[in-house]
Image (cartoon, rainbow, N blue to C red; front, side, top):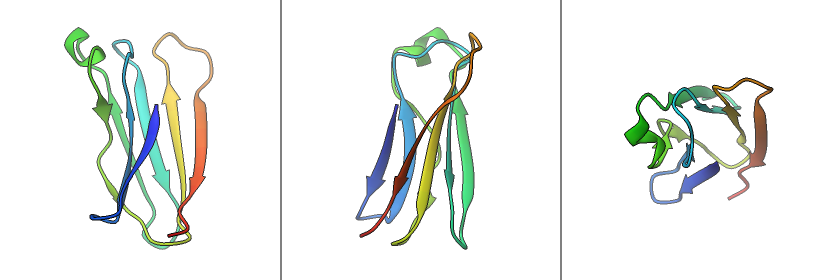
Length: 85
């Protein structure tokens, strides 16, 4: 799983690969324009490629959290980042 950023677009998103059908990736951004997006692997073909969330507009000072929710259960795994420009 990765948290990605595009300076050109001023956006961030999360993506995963090598996942299993039913796995879900989520990204939550903080701040006044905070958002939450998720994407789920729905087919075996998707499991063999990148599955990514929608892009979220971010600005300097935005906090980000990306989480993986495995279909097999267990807890979700989360990573945090902070955009500083």
